[in-house]
Image (cartoon, rainbow, N blue to C red):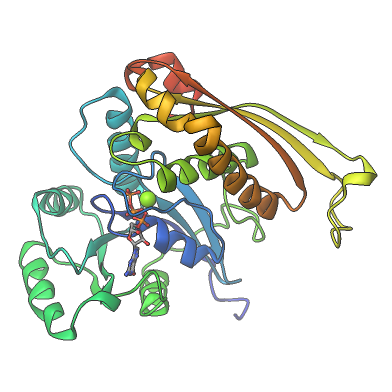
Length: 315
Ligand SMILES: Nc1nc2c(ncn2[C@@H]2O[C@H](COP(=O)(O)OP(=O)(O)OP(=O)(O)O)[C@@H](O)[C@H]2O)c(=O)[nH]1
Ligand SMILES: [Mg+2]
């Protein structure tokens, strides 16, 4: 970059219906696992930012909750967060799933709102690793009929195919602007939030049917210690040697609580040990994790609990 080249930056929302691979793409772009991913729809509940800075541009990506028709206060918060990120972005990426060809009703709504607000949108057709090449042309044609996209780019967020082309295209549309975040900052998420999300990811992976979608995780304590004798071998850098975390898992019914605890505590032990391993990897130190399950009927409509859980306007 020469001195006369202006710095360019912008907010770029990754938007679309549920389960199309928005969080997988965010993690690929960030180069680290910031957002949890699962085969179950409506995994992401709040917007998550990842900063990608190459020295001459800074892209602030925003992973958003999958767009759906909400039936609870939590659902409305998710949908509002997604619309806000989409409509506030400098450039938006609408992600669609090549294995479930659109545009469907939700994707048409994205296009309509983008047209109304004069939004610049790139279409990323994801999961191309799972379909034959010939299926792409008709999808491209069908989307091109409903909106004038800046570009339409086939990608695979899992393998990384096409992601560099997408990033290049995004950068070419960024306006001149400041570095919003320090160049070495990767996310706006706190360690507490990331820990709660890792626990939720393990619940999504272990529990089935409506149970994972009816759970939420609240971190009650997060205490750091620097006692020498528990230092992880090879980790000489960080001051803390272990973190003691206690978390509460809220669920909607006592029958769900029984399943989450499992026979003789087997399920909660499995969730706990898997989550602890992931959290230790992220924090780079030993972790003591204490999980408790609590039934809280209709928590998805409890305004003050939702705010405490980070699913409110004040997060
Ligand atoms: N084969 C394949 N699978 C993918 C790809 N991208 C995502 N997936 C899978 O699709 C599922 C959903 O991925 P997520 O990243 O959680 O999707 P999302 O759009 O963030 O979903 P919500 O947060 O629920 O809206 C997971 O099982 C991913 O592993 C891809 O490029 N190829
Ligand atoms: Mg997601």
